[in-house]
Length: 428
Image (cartoon, rainbow, N blue to C red; front, side, top):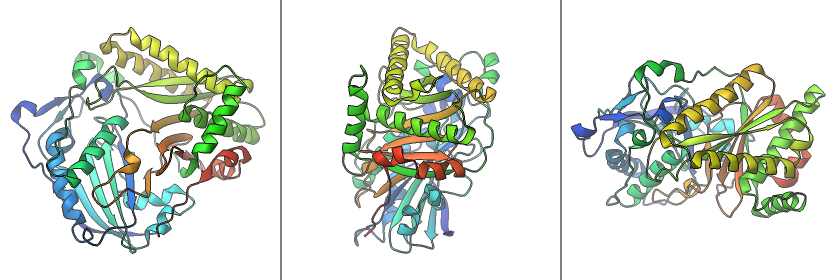
């Protein structure tokens, strides 16, 4: 296993101090009920032009300092009750690290777990209460390639907000005159209820046993094949890439569960749905609701049936939210979350968690030295499927996380391998 050595560690301060009027950033109810963890993303760049190689860190530090002036809550500290961020300009943590192996050893490892070396130790998916809300690590490989990882607090950033921040940071690195326009006004849409009700809404998290992850690619042509299968055998219209791909990995998960237990077990799959719009696109914070899709028979697991059920659940949620007052959305989201937690605790269903980071531009993040060859996350919890745009084309990458014995079965699942292949990148 590759090891790392910290070259330097510092706090990146804001280029322009936060004005006193913005010192207290109120968290929204959506922020408050979210998981208080660090979301860990990493971007791998194998080829660094000669004119950049000696000044990469300085470019990243300078641009981060400027962009933090616009994303000032990331440089603050969350209070113990998760009700506000003290925007005290403490700064973002920044590590310069050397990795004692070539990049190819990491991104061509069969398991995605190898990427853990480009994140600060023990930080991914850990509590963000007593740590910087943003922690960046610049990793230098023996081959001359680099990785940039960013761990942001999920308490104040959902996936949309994180992608907006990374895109704005990269734009600033390429052009220091660039001016981001984030709005930290989510609490006006989702205000916190009275203080007396807050303690009961905090989510509880439980330590999980060791899991492994692996990335698979669905090519554009294979996604088209899946869509054809779904539409020809049902009344489903215009299925999306994620709908058909998530239906397939769900079906593969069910197959493996049945092979292990000898019987069918009902399933629950959750999908995250962005609430922008109706919430403005530049509103930072958490603005996500979850879609719950259950199956109670083997027939419902079939691709056309599952996609039809997923589309129906999505439309029902849209219809419900359309006429709902915005300040009621967090309570409804909390109710859905509690329903899912009850199912998990009762162990009546196999649970699969899906999220999508597609159409965000993260797969093409360019700080000035080109696009990444790989974008990924640190390994998370069992039966977690994270969908991302592939680096080129209209296909999808999916990061599948499960227990090691299940992952061994995933790797040999014929139906999965008919439509998806393990991701291996060339760094030449």
